[in-house]
Image (cartoon, rainbow, N blue to C red):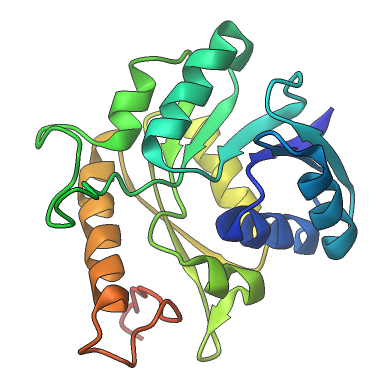
Length: 214
């Protein structure tokens, strides 16, 4: 068994795996098809990482698909009952890429809530407001990244918050799973800032930070 299963070998998967190594957590890293990609990333990051490929038995108590929303839903459906009781961390921003002007989920729902409909796992929203490049270091301008967390299961929330804290990040529990709706809009706005050529200071290297009063 491992502490975490991270699915994917892209930039977000790399950032999350780097934070897991920093936290001293064991990781099962599953590539979509090419096991060699998972093996190469495991070698690059060091730590306790077991490479594999999507379809392998899940060994992590916490599963983090570092993929887009539709792919995350497909993964939840693929693994079915094997996810029951596990913590399923939804990092997605379900952007409508056809218009790049809205989200693709219903206005009265969120990616996290839609995922919860198809899995017996405990779905927790987290990491959707952080960019891959900033996760690798865990800080922006000397500030630890905020990880905004929404979920309905207290133990699952604590597990995600504990991982974020051990990884040197600042967990902030914002409320129940339905608060994912607001987090996804925040994440979408952050994406729009970085995608704008008119805002060169925000090029995928910024962070959303909630600063409490002294």
